[in-house]
Length: 363
Length: 225
Image (cartoon, rainbow over all chains, first blue to last red):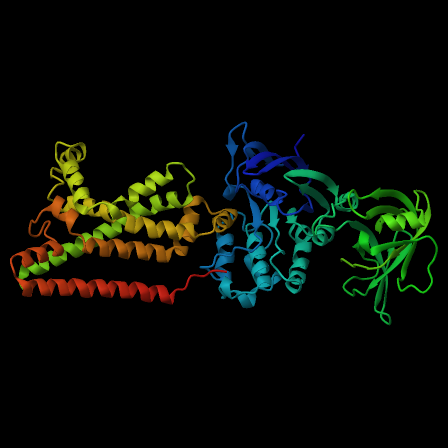
């Protein structure tokens, strides 16, 4: 029987930081390595790439062993057939965009595999930028060129280290479609490091949630994000639900898109890029879900879903309580205050109306 | 100007060219190692490289003279393979000058290599470039100014050498009599007119070389983003 997936076992200690990982990733589609800075996700990516050696451990893709400290095996990065894209692209500053692309293309032994350098240039709309130096590119252009360069190595596995974090919102939205297309259009499995829940929800099929050098949770993105209960200290409070939805209709008069979640219907700000019938992922932050015991009058919130309470989780040391509710078989997370819980006397099993305040249409 | 003047000048230029050329070759791997290593030995090696900066040239020359003696291992080895002695020979001058100018080649190169982000080298590796390939196609082009500075400084420093070469080379016309020694001789014998000629040429030459370097540095700003 052949071994599948990306197998990682690694121990690595720095000053004040220890990484201890054992996991097998599917290495199909897009997997996100998600966690706050300092959680070890970038270090893990560097271990997989071969930029870093573990103190002890083993890294293998299917039956190709890249590193096995017990057997003294270490395949250097340039022989691993990985593609690696850095946070700031790291185009070579002494070469033009064209020369950067050619640098990768020339060193690839499988140039007939997948797309040619001309096809890639066209796909990434780099034609007009070919003669430019990296220093004369905008952040978005630089990342586009860096991604194109990485693909020209025709990698077996694509490692992306926070490729959007150095970009502003406008540039992010120009790069995202390319990232979304990677697994299907280029047939390359992707491992994507990010600290943004939005990017995880939009891109990843599988999510590895990391904290303090360890894997907290691993599984399908929707399940991992739904289970995820971050602490409230700091800006890292993005608890919420990711829901599978189907586009029902666009309302051009009110500028709304109606989506169906389970048996319920939600109205979102219009997004014409999605056709009726498309399956989309939507993300609803827990703090944007309010609860009412009966249908309220004179309230501006339009999305009102009949729901049942399935769980109550007071957050230790904070005024908030996370409430799990179920809407026609779909799980939704709401965050309310302890005081509201007391006043409304909410209990598990109770019927309730979930009011979705902010319709964050993610895809 | 008399004929011996020019032969001393020619010998000096030849020495400086050979020394700076060889030094760039020798100093490059040493500087790369110093820039990248985390070995505990690093400060010791750095101190050894920097020694010629602080040692009186006579001290360095004295030890070299002893090492060049045919009865010493180095001098004996050289004699056995070339049939010539190192002391008071052009080859001895080259070797002594290389040691004396070593920090002027190693330090600019080390600084240039240290300023290259390790991520850029990782990027090269992820594009299938092996270590030597990545060094030649990424590290070297990004360190052009370091190479130029190293070559020019070791060239200029060798031009201006006096103490060490006097100790190990002596004053043999056409073999070890360099411009600096020639000028010293002329001044000692009160031939001020000849000394003026040679000193003027050396001054002009040094100035010209440095102007070229600074012009080059201004035209090629470092790309940082």
